[in-house]
Amino acid sequence: MATEKIKSLVQLYALLPENEKIIVDVLRHIVIDTLPGYCKEKLSFNVPYFYGKKGICIIWPATVPRGGIKEGVLFGFWYGNKLNDVDNYLTQGTNKQIFYKIYKAPEEINQRKIVRLLQEAIKLDKQW
Image 1 (spheres, rainbow, N blue to C red):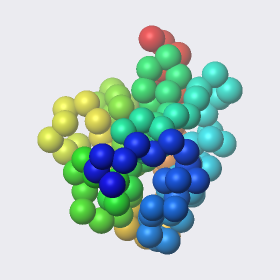
Image 2 (image 1 turned 45 degrees about the horizontal axis):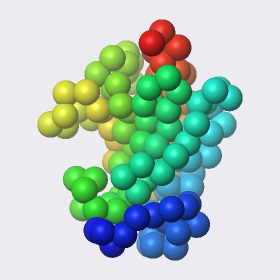
Image 3 (image 1 turned 60 degrees about the vertical axis):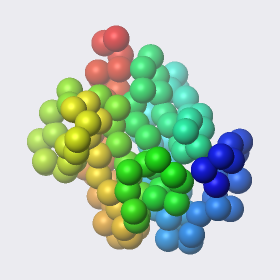
Image 4 (image 1 turned 135 degrees about the vertical axis):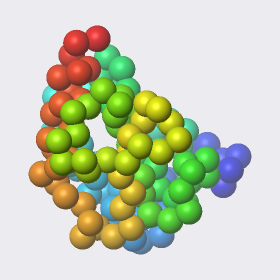
């Protein structure tokens, strides 16, 4: 898979184990339902990537190479370092800019906290 270019969500979902597929699907729907109409989704680095004027967030399943995780699904904010994460929900790894949360089960997804962070990311994106 490392050299294969994923061209559609159908193709991506076909490659994912059931658990990752469910997590990706739930996260995508939260993002799509929250982002305003000017924001778009595309596959970048073989994973769902959402952007407005700049990058907003990315959903990276462990099955897709180069994500840096061994299991679960990483949900990352491109400018997480600029978000006021009042719930301390996100993790700052080795990257100074991208903050993220890794989900290993759909039940771990906290929609309220994700929506709060997405709304903040949207405000930031509109300032660019």
